[in-house]
Amino acid sequence: MKPRSAQIAGWGTYVPERVLTNADLERMVDTSDEWITTRSGIRERRIAGPDESTSTMGIRAAEKALCRAGLKGSDIDLVISASATPDYMFPATGCLIQDAIGAKCGAFDLEAGCSSFVYGLVVGSQMIAAGGYENVLLVGAETLSRFMDYTDRSTCVLFGDGAGAVVLRACDDAYGVQAFELGADGAGCELIILPAGGSARPATEETVRAGDHYVHMAGNQVFKFATMTLGSCAERVASKAGWKLDEIDVFIPHQANLRIIEAAQKRLEMPMDKIFVNVDRYGNTSSASVPLAMVEAIDAGLIRKDQNIVMVAFGVGLTWAGVAMRWGVDV
Ligand code: ACO
Image (cartoon, rainbow, N blue to C red):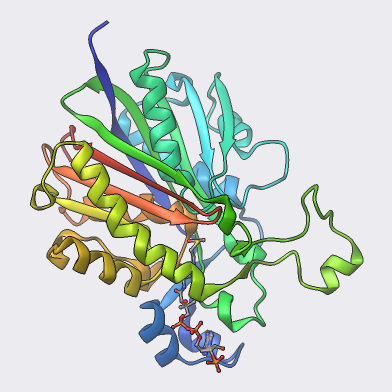
C-alpha cells in the first residue's frame, strides 16, 4: 500500500448563544474585569442552555463538518468524541453523536483532559494512515459550566462551553499529519481534578456538600507547566516534521490564557500574526478550544492550502499533545 496520511477535509463549530461577560461575573463573585483581562486575556465566554450538553453541541458542530466535507453520516467509518465533560460516565458521548448523525460505525470517547481533541487528531489520523479507515469524525466538545462552582473566583472566570468537529480523510502523505507528540505526566493528576463522581469517590451528600463535584485547580502550578509545555511541544513537532520554526505558517495553541500563549510566542520568536487567538471571546473551552480556534483561523483566511500548521494543547492529566500538519484542501 502507498504511504498515506490523514488531513482535515471538513470542519464546523457550535457555541451556545448565552454570553457570560466579565461584567456579569463581577456581579456573581469578588472579581473584576481588570483582574480577569490582565491575568487571562478573557473578556467573555459562552454558557450552554438548559437543553444543551456536550453531545448536542458536538452534534451541531459535526453536522457542519460533514456538510463541509460533502459527506453524509453514513459515509463515516469511525466517530471519536474527545471531551473531559461527556454527557454521562457511560454510555459514551461518541455513541450519542454516532446515532444522531446516522453513522453506522464504531464510536468511542477519548479523554485526555484539555488535550483530548489533539490526542484525537493523532489517534484518528493514525487509524487512517494504517489503512483501517477512510473518513473519521472527530468531535471536541465541552460543557465545563456544569462543573464550575460559580462562587469560586479562581476557576469560574476561566472556562466556557462550545464544540468543534472535523472530518479526517485519507490523503497523500505529502499532506495531512506530518508529525505528532503525545505526552502525559500523571504525577500532576491532582493539579486539575474533579474529585467526586467517579469510582474512586462516588457522589454522596458529603461530596456534594464539599463541592467536590466541581473543578478544583492549582492555577499557579498549572500555569508553570503550561508555559513550559506549549512552546517546547510546538518546537519538537515542527522539528520532527523537518520544519524550521520560521516555516510554521500558522500556530493554533490551546486557548487557556493569553499570557501562556504570549510566553510560547516569545520562546518560538514567532510574529503574533501567525498565532490565532480567540480566548478573549470563549475563555478556556478545553477540548473545544483548538478546533474553535482552527475554524475561526480558516474563516479569517489565515489557513490556506500548502501551509504548515502546528496545533498544541495541554491540560488535565497532566497531558499535552502536538500535531504538525500540512494543509491539503482548498478553503
Ligand atoms: N478575581 C480576582 N482575584 C482573583 C481571582 C479572580 N477571578 N482569582 C484568583 N484571585 C486572587 C487570588 O486569590 C490571589 O489572591 P491572594 O494573593 O490574595 O491570595 C491573587 O488573585 C493571585 O492569584 P494567582 O493564582 O497568583 O494568580 P495568577 O497570576 O497565577 O493567575 C490564573 C491565576 C489566571 C488562574 C493563572 O494561574 C492561570 O492561568 N493558570 C493556568 C490555568 C489553566 O490554564 N488551566 C487550564 C489548563 S487545563 C485546561 O485547559 C482545562
